[in-house]
Each structure stands twice: as C-alpha cells, then as structure tokens.
Length: 234
Image (tube, rainbow, N blue to C red; front, side, top):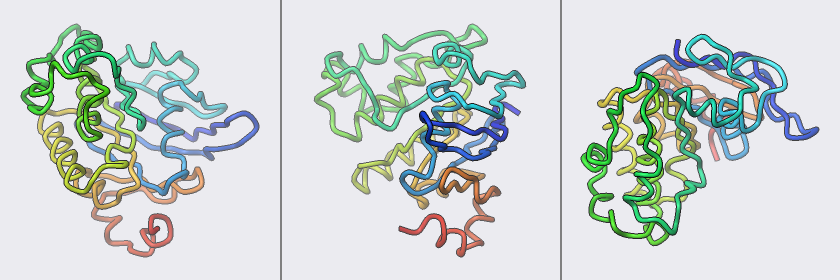
C-alpha cells in the first residue's frame, strides 16, 4: 500500500478536528475523500503533509511512518500537494512557475518535464509567457496541478480542484484528472462536488464532522442514497 492513514486525531490548538480518520491509497488508484465544506478534508491533507501534524495515530508512506516529519521532507519523499488556494507565483510567467518547481522523482528519474506538461495542458503552452496572476481561475488551477507534477511525485493530493470554477471549467478539470489517471498518476482527491468525484474515482471515503462515515467503491456509494443524503446533500 502506498499511503496508509491510521486512526489519526488532529487538533488546531485546543480544537479537536479529526477523530480517528483512517484511509489508504494504493499505487495507480484515484481515491476520493468527499464531504461538505468544513468536514475535515483539507485538515486530513494537511495532516498527511505535516502542515497540521496528528497528535495521535500514524501516517505511513510506503510502509514507513512520516507523521511528525517536516513538510519539506514529506514532499521530497514523493507526495505532491495541490492546495485549494492554488498558491501560484503571480509575478512569474507560466513557464517560470513550472521551471522553478522541477525536481527529480524519488527514483532519480524525471518523467514530468515542461514539454510533457504542455502535452497534457496545451492551454498552459499557449500562456507560457503570461504572468501567473493574470490567468483565469481555471487556468490557475491547471497551472498549480502542472507545477506539482513538475516535482515528479509518486502521489498527487488534489484539494478541492473544482472549487469556485464554472461548470464548463469543472468538466475540463475532470477530463484532465482522467487523463492523468491514464498516465498512471496516483491521486487522492478531496472534494465536496460528488458528481465530479464519482466521475474520476474508483473508491470513496465520506467524511463528516472529522470522522469517516463510509468507505467503499464509488459504485457502492452510489448504491446508498441515504448516505449521500445524510452526509453530502447541501
């Protein structure tokens, strides 16, 4: 198993946010963590990345515990994090945003290059000399995903990639995720958009109030409308 999150409890100060969250992702999978806004999705990702270290429980990466490690060390170990806020460099061009993020993978190889990124994201090649801060929301989302791929990660954490985007752009991002799956990119996706999540994932975890309420295949989740209504309906 590539990633295993085992019974983690995470706090922000005195506030208890995650209550025994467990999940796992194997190589080649696209797994979604779905829940309403504030359910604990982003905190789960931050717990994995060491940005909000769990107080108890374990995060195993390739069988080794990484909880408590600094975020830069976790990133170097092969986990790429695409944050919800995108956090591109607005005063750098698209090409510079990509180039500054390039590093070799954990195996010393570099399958993701600027040229390969442009094949997957042709819009970014069209905008390669444009400042990042002048891109549209959808283009910035593409750029932050592409920039993370330039680090040649073994696992991609995608936090709310459809958030705040127009429906047509959401569809385009969904197509990009499906294309990344064809490129054998392993993905853990956090989303509140259930339709988007089910369209790109094989397995699902439902989180509510900091607790995992369901785990199974996406087909099994679709077969339980009462779970969708209780934990995911707006």
